[in-house]
Structures are given as structure tokens and as C-alpha cells.
Image (tube, rainbow, N blue to C red; front, side):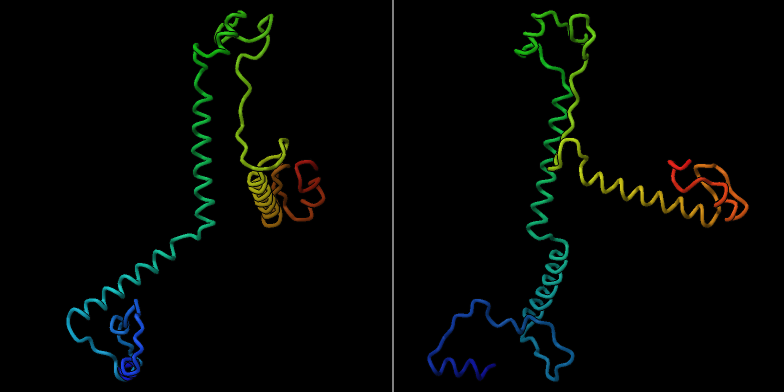
Length: 194
């Protein structure tokens, strides 16, 4: 390396390397026959600091998410905050200074009573369900649907295990003496069959 530096200085080539020579900061390689020795105590402390800081950076990198995941988490967090604020505002009654409330009061509405000529209408406003999925109105949130399917599969697995290992039918509420008795007396594996 020293020869390379001498050749560069002799030929007039002087590259400004902003990183400098980092080899003296690296820990000694046990496989190398002549490991580099630091020239002073300061260099050895720098080497340990470099190693420690590189270990910390690796730990941080392992914990950090890529920008897309960070963006998704941040968006979900903001949506949850907005939902909480919206639900908090909905729970609060309409103030009497509200124009709509004043109009209702002029038409004979009293707070807490039902709407309509005979008072047989709604007493509470129509409920609000915040939907963040892009599924249609009649459709459940895809995440909820997936969770339901998983729960149903788990329930089915448990019921089958009860039938096969313990000869028990949950819907019949009976434990049979043998598998043949279970198959002949139990109408089926589903609740609809019973």
C-alpha cells in the first residue's frame, strides 16, 4: 500500500480520498500472518469505537423497516387517530347553537325524544361504521373475512379431532363407545346436519 502511495505521489497523481485509509480502524484479522499494529493508543481506541459503532448500526438496520413499510405503518397510525377523533365527535351531542338543531327545535323536536308525528321514529341517529377497505358496502372488511375463515378452519379442525380421537360429537353432545357407533348414529360433521 505504501508503494502505491509513493507511485501516486511520484507521478503527480493525488486523488483526494474523502474516506481516507480505514485499514487501521479494522480489527486485526486472526488469519493474516502479520496483522497491522496500531501506532498509538489513540488508534487502538478508534478501532474499538469503529467496531462498536458498526455493531450498533447493524442492530439498528435489522430493526428498521424499508420506506414502504414505514409509510404503510404511518398511514395506518394516522387513520386510527382520525377514526378515534371522528368517533369521539360523534358521541358528543349536537350543541344547541347548531343551525340544524335550531331548525329541529322550531319544528317541535325535544332532545332525547323520537322523531315523527307520533314520536314513533328514531330516537338516536343512524350509526356510523368507519370503513377503510375498498370493498363494497355490503361486503365485510377483507381482513375480518380472512380472520373469520381462519377461525372457522380452526374450529373445524378441533371438531374433527374430537370426533376422531375421542369419538365425541359436539352437536350431539354425546361420546360414542366406538367409531362405528359414531358414524352410524351421528347425522354428520356440521351443525346443519344436526
